[in-house]
Length: 130
Ligand SMILES: [Zn+2]
Image (cartoon, rainbow, N blue to C red):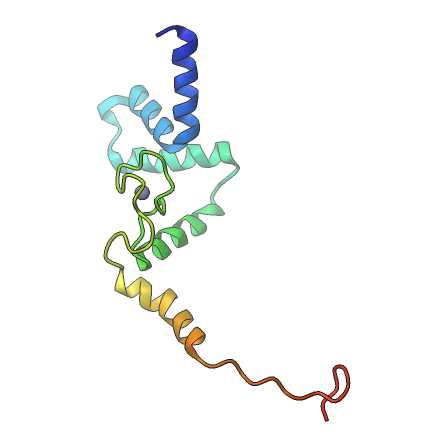
């Protein structure tokens, strides 16, 4: 493989999985001194820095993970190429749901959708009630 082909391959892999690429680079730099939790936290920070994300995105990331758990999906929703957890199969229903998260976020929506819609009030003139 030529240098240009290697660079092209590296760029393609990085674009397909930025978190995986950053994680790999951290492992190359720090080696075994970097434990998994720290590597994951650093990866999130670095990817956030490059994508414009930051601390304000942490709540959104957390909510995404809770909603994925509530719906039995992988954190990547089956959309991350080469996801080590689900191998791109992690859409809703892929695993058992987290019942507490389901009860908190999904069940209220289902109950609201099951209620009949309120009847429309008759109107005699545009915007006025009889
Ligand atoms: Zn996944």
